[in-house]
Image (tube, rainbow, N blue to C red; front, side, top):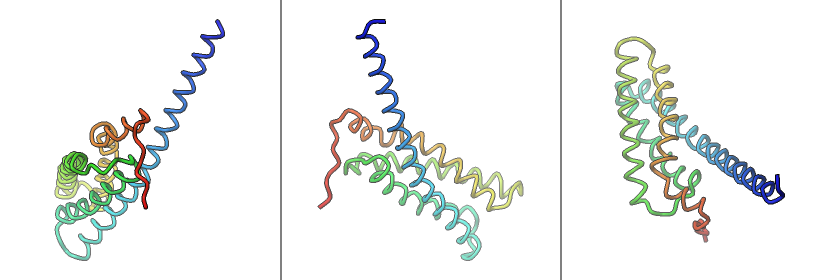
Length: 161
């Protein structure tokens, strides 16, 4: 193998490692923000259902609304370091949140109302399902322009004053 080919191979490996490290940090930030949003959902859903004496679907919907708002702000600013174009990102995120409502509704209805699982287990399953689906959708659809700009080197986060 020629020296030039060896250098190119090392460069390609370095770029691959760099991309892998960047993706790992992105996934870590997503897990922290999403984990906090999931915890917020779980606590609110259970507290509302138990203490406010509202139905399990209403409790789940209210908890998901609060968690979605928290997650949007966290992912926009921390996870994806998106620019301030809320008019671009928020509708996409809202669509994703509505899909999460659909998943939540179906799982709660299927598991709780058919007496397959207690509400706390169903709420935990909703949190896990929404976390997995949301990561993929946020990464590939909602905040993709922010990531593409950052990866190309043309994006510089605004400095806070």
